[in-house]
Amino acid sequence: MRKLVIGNKNYSSWSLRPWLLMRQADLAFEEVRIPLYQAGSKENILRFSPAGKVPVLVDGEITVWDSLAICEYLAECHPEKALWPHETRARAQARAVSAEMHSGFANLRKHLPMNLRRSIPRAEFPAEVRAEIARIQTIWSDCRARYAHGGRFLFGGFCIADAMYAPVVMRFRTYGVGLEGAAREYAAAIEALPALARWIADARAEAEVLPEFEL
Image (cartoon, rainbow, N blue to C red):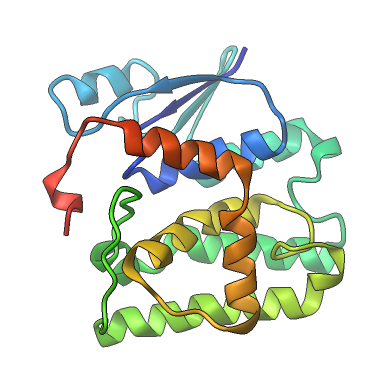
């Protein structure tokens, strides 16, 4: 059986992405949780990947690290699961917005770290964070305008793009980011996922507290 090596569920947004995708796609895997920034954490992760970071997917003799690379690998292994949209234009856009999430939004990550145990509504955000929040809402609204006929998610049915943005939905909830229209409806669809509810319950049961993520 495949193994998915993840970090703390309360803090590790990158771990959430492939975990949620695999749960939504009903792909069996063994979960290996390694608490981050603890004594021995790095050494334990290095047992699975020389990159020394989570998440890591171990599939027999194949090891894949990095959230998006794991999702791409799973899409190749399971074309029947439609982890990317079937239609060429939609698939290209889904890949583009996923890559934008993967490589961008550094200010959002810095100022709004994922923390599922906390509710920290803010009245104001730095200008650079507001710009990234606006960009994300534009992405969500544009995708929904094009593909809402197919379902409640960015491209109709749940796909890799939704897994990439699910942690952002959680950040917005933690820090009280106001959403409107299609972006608000999309966030509600993500929050309603039973698999995400399970992740959140596990996160709230964790004992570890990482001060650098407790703003």
